[in-house]
Length: 337
Image (cartoon, rainbow, N blue to C red; front, side, top):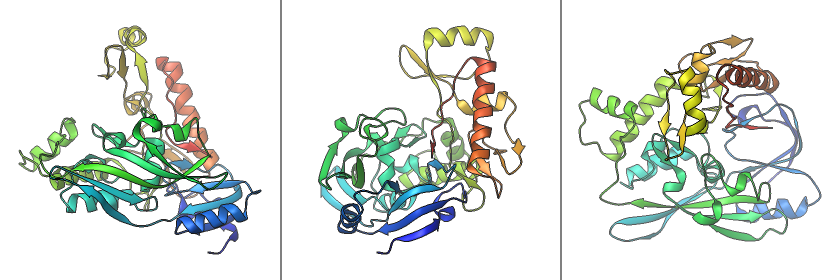
């Protein structure tokens, strides 16, 4: 366990941004993590997972601690359910595929989401009608101040749409070390309610899909729309879909009757941010090496040598244009560093 200085983070963020860490160390166990925190109490610290949900706009003048804890195991099970624990450093997609191989249901709609397991509760990731909180039981986290382990229950995490207590009230106070999920062993709740999944399954003449077939459909859809970060730097969806009060939305909808939307409650609707960005003319546009992907307007990309600030400026341009055009503010889903 060696602390390195002036360390390049280009391979540690999916945008492929060239930025440096003043100091960098990878930890592979809770013991190593505890030691690093104790030995560097006075230093400012930056916790790094899979690097998939952040935009680096500058060098990090801190000790970057890369959480590389590995391992997964069955904690408990009965005839219907299994409780599975994954260490924080496990790759999310590989973990999802492992659960499917075991015929454990619940995570298949979130196949191919980039990042590591430990960051999934922070963002409450989700895709195609499911969210991480749907199967989440608890997570274990280490306090950065006194290195004590604490278990956070689902209720304590205060999950919302791409929100949790870890992004708000206890931000930077805890490091998630492992997560427990409750998955089905039989009578799986197969969710194919999203049109894209239905169309993909129909294309392959699948009417009664298995967990793997749903996962394969999601992977095919994501690969057709989203660039591989290894080939084209990106962080997946850059913006959240805005949620509006129906009373506010109805006024906007009168002016833009073609605007797409989804009812999410009796009082709220969700508007697809990708639709707004596409209507504003940004889809496929390029500003130097920073741009918007040609197949998915929600995805900002690095064509090679874009800086984080250049990508940030593109995102601000999009936000300002959307607000001027539609009177709707779209919020970044990605953490701006």
